[in-house]
Image (cartoon, rainbow over the protein chains, first blue to last red):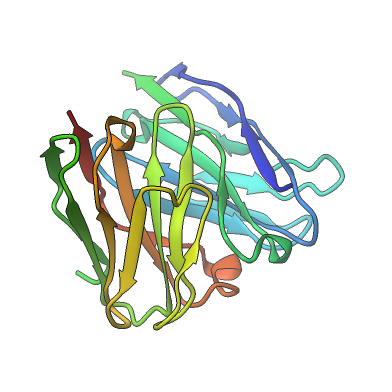
Length: 113
Length: 116
């Protein structure tokens, strides 16, 4: 079946450090891939997306590249800020899954000043 | 602001009580979803409605019912609450199921439910 695996958190970084949150997936068909962010007490917000292999999604300094050969969609940011502290969810949608989103378990990021 | 509105934000129920969680969206989306979020388990789909007039079970439908009242509103009902239903519930919407693959979902801010 379709699934998403994320690195376990929490991830704790100092401000201006480089961020990588790993995400790998298993899917049949041709999935679209997403990163969502959840700030404390809020719902999930779409951060970025990629709908086909080799696409790079980017937003607010975050980037992720759809790697079909490694079935990965790792989230990166060159210089994190305290305001980036949140939970990050990797997700996929595929036509073989009836177009319903499958979410990873989430990775909590703490950024220290 | 346009988006998905959920009510209530917080609720405490006693075991066996019933309640309905409300969700409304003003983006003219066709598809709506109910998820629950539990620590370490990500989000799990309870029910969804691909379009007005249709509803389907998701991954964890037991103990829940839904109603797609109209295009804007999609409610989730717990008929007899159990402690295992303590969770944070999120409603989401997308233009249509297959277009969600291109545009993703818009989420509400959640309902935190505790069943004692």
